[in-house]
Length: 128
Image (cartoon, rainbow, N blue to C red; front, side):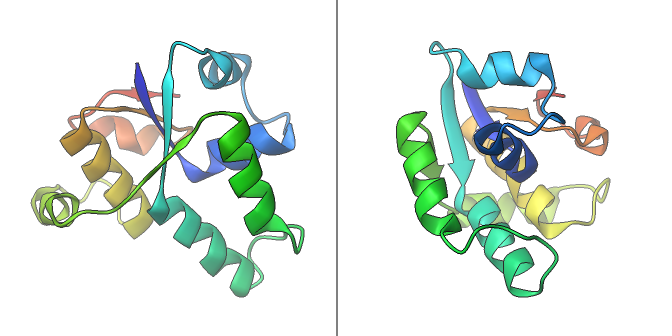
């Protein structure tokens, strides 16, 4: 299964955070799943670190890159098609990072792994 990781899921998985459910951990670790992380999630992390909303090690870019390689997580770019899809999405969610993840999951036919139940209102498959 092609899985698009929400930002929180990736951070919790690579930090061994107890908020990552056993179900989500199993999906993350299943070698049969193809894991993807959006560049939008990386951008979200950078913004939150820069404004002090997220505290990470100064080495966070290297750590994320290393963990993505270790876990065979592919970086998903943002395309014009993804952006066009956002314009058509209903406003179930106002967060721009979540909206791009929804658009990417829809266009790329991926399952979104997220703890945000609001995302289930969209025409995508969400595992929480």
